[in-house]
Amino acid sequence: MVIRIASRGSELALWQSRAVAGSLRAADPSLQVEIEVIRTTGDRIQDVPLAKIGDKGLFTKELDNALLEDQADLAVHSLKDIPTRLPDGLTLAAVTVREDPRDVVLLPPGQAGGLEALEPGARVGTSSLRRVAQLRKRRPDLELVDLRGNLNTRLAKLDRGEYDAIILAAAGVLRLGWRDRISAYLEPPRWLPAVGQGALGIVCRTDRDDIRAALAPLNDPDTAAATTAERALLRALEGGCQIPIGALGLVDEGQVYLAGLVADTDGSRILRVHQVGDVKHAAAVGRAAADELLAKGAGEILASVRARVVLAEPAAP
Ligand SMILES: NCc1[nH]cc(CCC(=O)O)c1CC(=O)O
Image (tube, rainbow, N blue to C red; front, top):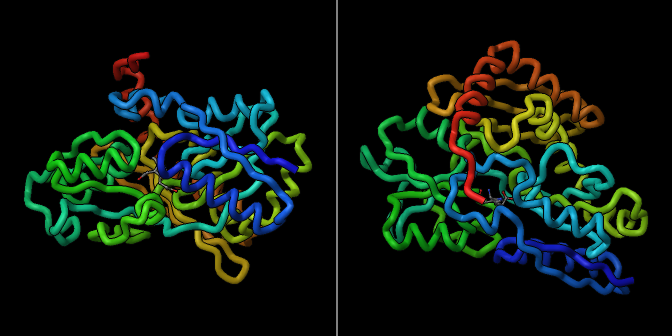
């Protein structure tokens, strides 16, 4: 059987697609796996802050269409880029074993230290509202600057001296072989990563039983349970990437431990919750965490953030 993987063209996306191709062949050496590169809206629009584009599925829509039109058999994404509701006809068929889920600090070459070591007023590059809110809380004196582009572009901007530090997901940094550039790890649960961060999600058509069977060995049950809880939290709050929401699930001896937070973009309010439950009911653990956040006042934060997003300028085409 030939399996066609639809992939974005960035170095990270290709690394991830090749990793999945390798795992598929390892599980069934008779498989022939091909990778087809597809450009997404998120790849095309490089100069507008992500929070202003605001479209769910910015990095997934074109790949979804390739699957629905049978131009490819499966698509590999960073799970954190996959919306919590998939288009009709598509399913999240596997979640791979998680890479380090933490965020990390990168500094210009030759420098060392964490957030605490940055000078007052230092320019820190990040494009995510979640990172902005947590940074503002921890270091209100820093100057936060938007940072877009794929990982190679972001590192190049740091090395050109445009920032005093940047915040990235450890997973992408490690996959691209830049471990020695990591200057500090932002530790959970004080600092929480994005929902799904560090795991890969593999999407295919719901009616493709053959592909789902080929993908079954790639699914990691612990990662799947942890991220099911995280995604249920996000879904219950209808977060998308517009709202500062962080979450991290951990599985131990049949229990999923979920930490979650919702923040105001200025970091003035950060609401935190913890929930524990059986891995068999991981989604319920996520919904319970969302309910607890709402009970603590998350609805008010979400409404004020949404109002601000609606007022923001529309993205250029
Ligand atoms: N937002 C873009 C994105 N999507 C996935 C990753 C990294 C890999 C991962 O989290 O699995 C990144 C880069 C980053 O946030 O630093």
